[in-house]
Length: 226
Image (tube, rainbow, N blue to C red):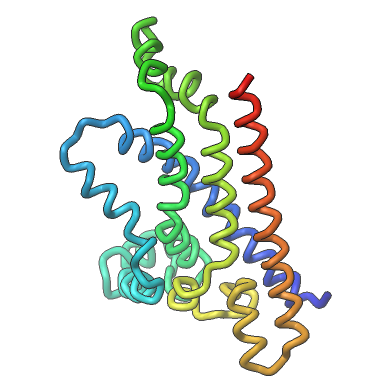
């Protein structure tokens, strides 16, 4: 394996890892709010969270590219005050990846919360436990499969991202070129052998992620029966 091949996979794994960690931290409170809050307009937040599922990646990537421009306040802030240029850079594709993968993390965790009996949370409150303690010691330990599903789906989906990253990052080798873009690039160059190597890695990785999800969920269901 040459250096460019390994570097491409390193960028892919780094992007997927940072995206997953970021969404795990913000996804839990968002999912908790969407499940248990009585706020009437939370349906609007739910729509925004799920929007990347139905929005074409090129559309999201286009608007993010405009937002990352120094001519827009968001991009100007990062460029002027933090000296970070978001367009065609790794920080830019990281922000785009986080936004694009929100529903995969949040919806998985929200499903886990929704499947828990309400009495579990109420019993914790009755015993005088705070909302944070209830979340940390009662709710989260009982939705471990949902948490794992969210983590695995987010990581795997980030590895396979194409449209958003291409629009924001521009497929720059050693900087924003990830494995999914490399497959397309090598096919365009008629380098089918190298494209096949990238594709086989993506296929094998996706299959492994699904095995982990189904295996953990199966063991959890067995445990619940007893």
